[in-house]
Image (cartoon, rainbow, N blue to C red; front, side, top):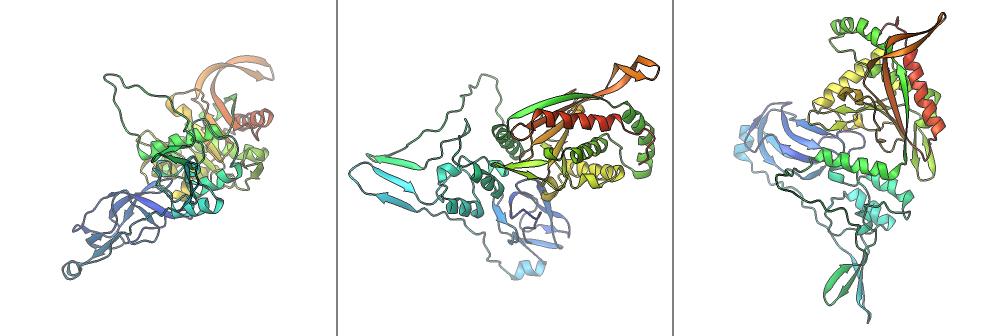
Length: 435
């Protein structure tokens, strides 16, 4: 049984938990272990029926795609063979230059391959060595991988901005140590984070892997992008009335719920067509205008964490296609069945804070995107209605849209005009349309 390929950009995975132990019987397609990539957790099924003869890696090991992770055989295999395969050991080498002078000895790292509290894949180490990034500098790069690990994309995104001002809570990137009287001391001390006091009755819990990932990603986003948020209130009465009319019919026919989310995504995709400069990424001083419109939708997990599956080419789908895709991704997200590629490649993100009863929010941009839209709770409110016979007061279904954007490349005029256009598409929804 080998470590499966979980997506185009996934080269390795971490074994979280073995669901079977040596000597256990297993059926074909029965789950044998849980693994985690940089983005998503998955269960790996057995390719055949048999007995677990040998587990070749331990829980917590990082394994390359294609590596043999366990041996499965028949009862005869178990009795007649003694597998000798063993999990490969990972060794780390250190190269140093020692300059002998009358002054205190200066030890300078030539390679970043020295001991560190963080795990770095061979690919990341090779890139760091090629670019002359020493260990202390490597340790300052924010990681979006498992438990804050630095991925290939992280280090490549860091290179164009290398040498610029350092974020307040990162360590100074300098690997020079002074040795005097047998003592080593860092030449530059790390920036200190606030001390946290523990009081009587306080409970301490460790963040899980996904919470650590989210925390790293959110801090990195705030350090990367100057956030600005624009707000618009939209009248979504036609959408509410249409959904009330169609939801029972749709559920009876398709066996699925008809939610507001695909309608919101449709409006966002249309607005991006009108304002393509919100569908971009920033690479140093370069702006990358995305050809495809891939809209991520933030989905809450049973654990309370969030994950963002991506609807690829959302502008090419009709409302029926969007509804089926949204439901499929949301259901598999709740059951940890998403593939890594299904949460990558997003160019814009939608989050529904109304799900939690919130009327608006100030969302954090999902890097390397430059904008994110939060939709609030739909509430009945008195509103002025303009008619050919004059203005009148009526009860309308109203909703706030909160559009956060990266002010490096999205100015207020663009950010504000975009969210206004989304509101226009929602307000112009045809109450007589079919799905």
